[in-house]
Length: 322
Ligand SMILES: C[S@@+](CC[C@H](N)C(=O)[O-])C[C@H]1O[C@@H](n2cnc3c(N)ncnc32)[C@H](O)[C@@H]1O
Image 1: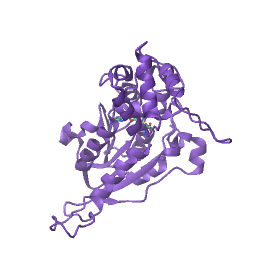
Image 2: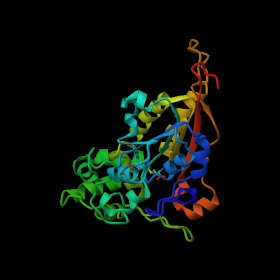
Image 3: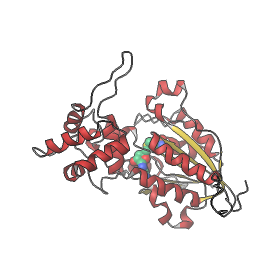
Image 4: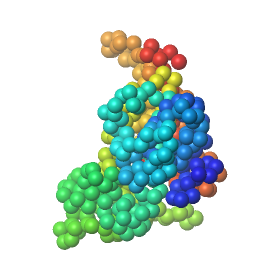
């Protein structure tokens, strides 16, 4: 690892690296969870700050990420590695996990997942239409595209991709699959592109017309938003008082869930004079800082950081005290 957490072997640059480590406030003998190991950019930074009594639990849905974790940190007695979704955190042996001093979720896909055509995430690199982070769980994108109704496809593209051409694309997909199934990413991307009008402003980098649809199908296939909601609840329970939760999201749907979750546990809801007095609100979280975004220097080095938003909150004592 180089300064800033860059992994020379994978080319993966962890986003908002310094802000994450500051936000988690890593101390030498603390216990931390990186719920989205990826290539371990952030995990490596946590480990550098841990002393011999510190502990780092890492998890990822993706077997390739877990193989990297084993390779890099398998011999480090401070590190426990587990393959699975952070949504299943609550089902871990509680004593082995909680209470934690810090938890990181760096959401979405890693650069290697997008770059390896065989994983089937990329509209730019032709590969089998898969898109599962965990290739042993859930339905491949190809199987979902083959069986979903036109309305369901349109709904997913609209809800998770905010794709305004969702109905037109869904109609085109259903018409084409009647002739031949979609098995490759490039094939699906071409049909989507043919149904999305190009709006390219001079001087701006053109985004691929399948970007929104691929994002939507990926979120659906991996149950990303449901996992996030379950994972946030489990994370709050697993933190000790004073422990920090740091979440990096990459699109507005994720960030909305994170923002609402933190605000819902930090701020009393606005009262309604017509309703009887509700039970007094007891905050469980304190917002540590405003949402953080990458600065110009990071964006130049890592354009993927453009949409990243980091939110950090601290768990309060049971009565709501800091
Ligand atoms: C953006 S990358 C993380 C990068 C990492 N912070 C680093 O510095 O290398 C996201 C990773 O989270 C994993 N992931 C996404 N959702 C997950 C979930 N619900 N449970 C476990 N891992 C998940 C993906 O497989 C991917 O490897």
